[in-house]
Image 1 (cartoon, helix red, strand yellow):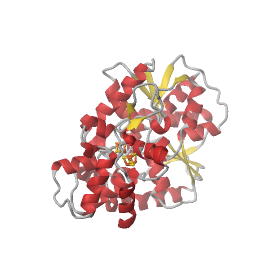
Image 2 (spheres, protein in one colour):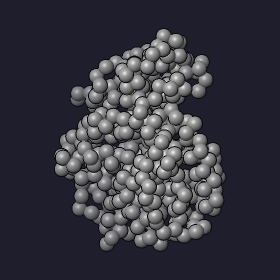
Image 3 (cartoon, helix red, strand yellow):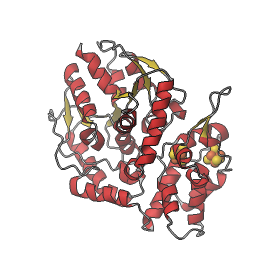
Image 4 (tube, helix red, strand yellow):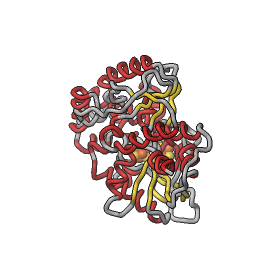
Length: 371
Ligand code: SF4
Ligand code: SF4
């Protein structure tokens, strides 16, 4: 975004702060929507405060990187709840998560980077994955298959049960697939934390590898990878779909209904960024009974781990996830289901103590296919 465009967007914000509350229960207490503001409790951590910080930097009023400033800039999950809410109230599109990414790019240009985020760059340089893991995740692959499964760092190294479930679904349904031996991090975490230069090499590599695969359709279980490749990569002439979209296209699968009542958690990148709300629900309905939580779809409460928050502010990330666990409990369920490895990892960590089980949609479909 150009400087003038950024400043124009900043000046369009009237600082009403209505983007911090969800309002679809008019007769009940309004629930918070901005995890960052709610956790830290200062204006600087809500969307309008963060915009004001950006204005002050652009107009030369803030020239020193205090710890507080860095925290306010980086302790935001870029969940986009503020953007959706602001748009609903004002009918003006102040593209808040994009502005906050621009803010981070500006900080990175000045060298104002968090050590935790610098470390990710080092790990990626060394291992090509965001966790610095040296052991390869290997899966069988059919050379030249039409379907390519892009696994992503988190499903490879932190929640491999999601990748395993997706691969088993392909096998059970007789779908030939390939995975990339040389799959590198998609670059999402670098782009979201303002470190664009470091992401370029990864993107170039993945573009070449995807083109070379000859696949026509790329399936993602990670909405962060899908969102990045769809929005930040050039068009590669292949179709990019989330696992739940892929599964809905298969029509009625012969799945056994599981005796489970679950709540579905909308991942931010899948819902607010890509507009995919119905496909995961449609797939889940074939396997389990779903209960909605109070904050869902455009006004879903974020799990707390995106935007580089999990690596730099784990206490905040776990608190946000804990709030979601409480909401699921209030909805009367003991199983929370998402469609994102990042969400699963964080919600599971927060849910373990509370006795809440956490799954990905593909894990439940895979269980349903067992019968
Ligand atoms: S971003 Fe929108 S909703 Fe939030 S304070 Fe500014 S104008 Fe109000
Ligand atoms: S993107 Fe999410 S965490 Fe960041 S200011 Fe908006 S609502 Fe708050």
